[in-house]
Image: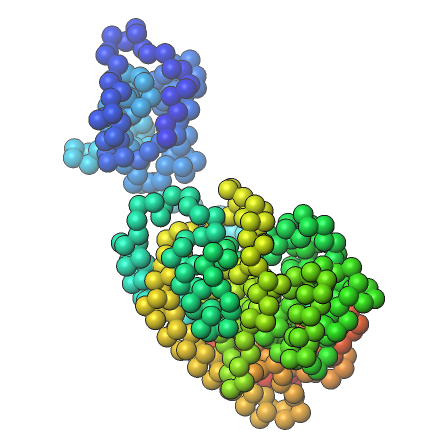
Length: 492
């Protein structure tokens, strides 16, 4: 927007009438040319305007071909005489900065591209060593995002949305999405979810940040975490002033039987991935699920359940959400990041009744809010059945990739043990002791990015097995065969 605060006095000596500043002229501004921010400096208005426009073109703020406002509109916006603007335009046309044609208005002139640097000039080189393929865990196949169906849902949802939907609204999120999620989560994940107990947030990390605030206000000091997991989650809790002691992990999953004992005695909450432990890939054993719930009931603790990939289970053994065992002691956190795309920044928390108010207070009126159109679109996407169709289709696609990964590795080296593949979007490839880092380097030589299992180990956890964590969902179809070949070569 133009800045009329510099040199605001009208040109009384020019003899020209100052252009009117009525709403009609201002309202036509956007239709006749670009909106400009100009600061007029110098002894005279004409020279100040000329210099400001010249500098805007020279610096690239006004790109070639951009149409400028008419002299009347710009004069009205700046509160100066129209002739002053016309004279400045004429001078810049004469200098070649602008062009003026009848019926086309005044535009920024198209200038020749700058000459290439001389051969002796040091030039930036493209980055070297970037991987050609990625099997990093944590991402779905972004090329498979259902664009056409999403656009259809967006069109329907936005067309039907009431005007008030585009205001600030309920800090819990749009009721349309919360109502649909309550039905979906009950049906698909066994979650007890009343719409009034659901809070929409901008991704899992946002939800965890809110819980960190709530736990500190409740004077919780320790949040137990799994001995393997994402350091970003531990860091978020630490930033909230919470300690994160590690729970041990074995072939039955995370060992919850020691909660409330030893170094875990002071824990007031525990962060877990019970359906499909990340990154090891084990489901939490039924006895340990019960032990975690019993602990929470006994001490009044909270279980923060990260159900990050609950939709993608490939065997016939159902593993529902832990929240269904005790909705008053489990905070269920789900997300669209794996089922659709992380760029949507849509996630949800299903809260115990007595936590709703505290979470909303922590969220505040100015905290992150997920886009209302995206919330409405996801609600329509689920209601129409498109979400279920997409998840079923992606489940089949990912299962085929998992099977191909296992088959290719078996042909390449029958001794490689692949685990954690009953669900999710990644697999764990066990390696001989002491070879983890060399395998990562070998993959890098093949142009392949992979993660070592040790990358996810808690600093206080005992060293475990050597392995690679392979995200088989990450590559688009066009890169899948090449990524798989590179992995087999690296393991050679």
